[in-house]
Image 1 (cartoon, rainbow, N blue to C red):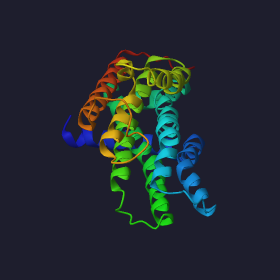
Image 2 (cartoon, rainbow, N blue to C red; image 1 turned 90 degrees about the horizontal axis):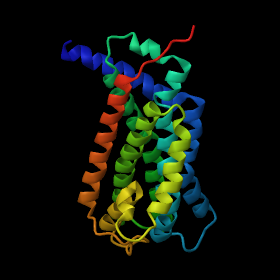
Image 3 (cartoon, rainbow, N blue to C red; image 1 turned 90 degrees about the vertical axis):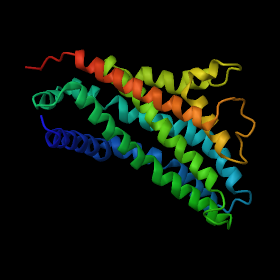
Length: 258
């Protein structure tokens, strides 16, 4: 098939995935969770908290955004990416199209990635803006903080999404496994001394923030990994898990309900 034909297939699957993730009730509920950082910073500003500045902003964002929102949003979006269509047998409509199974998995992951950015990036940027305006600082005064958090969002969202997409094609019930990894494994392994934290995604995200932000709560975080190395690891991990998801999906067989 020609390149134009492949492009049309990609646009159709990508568009359907994006619309499903952003317009269903689950997508709307996920958007409310993604808005928590903005709600919190706006509440602090309206409450006229005297110590509300970029340092407090970082202190709040690391546990709330990095360890909760950035895990939960990809978890909800990616575990439903393919598994719900398999369970509802609506996947058969896509499989009747002249699109290979690996291509479907890849296009769906691309749709997830854009949906994740749409949900997570605007609240984060607005939260930063609220903080700077309240502290009467220039929006450019602490761009290292915003840049670090945006980098962690893109790379963390890609890595978590790839893992949860893989679980969605591998397991019949991927959500429990995703919860165990995102909120148990990441919390426990990420806090163990030595090299064990290198087995967690959160370790690389914290390493990025430590290396890119001049002053903040992660300045003393114990890591010997630079932001560049951490980014390479997360990109490689994401690619490997997406390829694994494509391979598993290719070998999967689905029975259509009568």
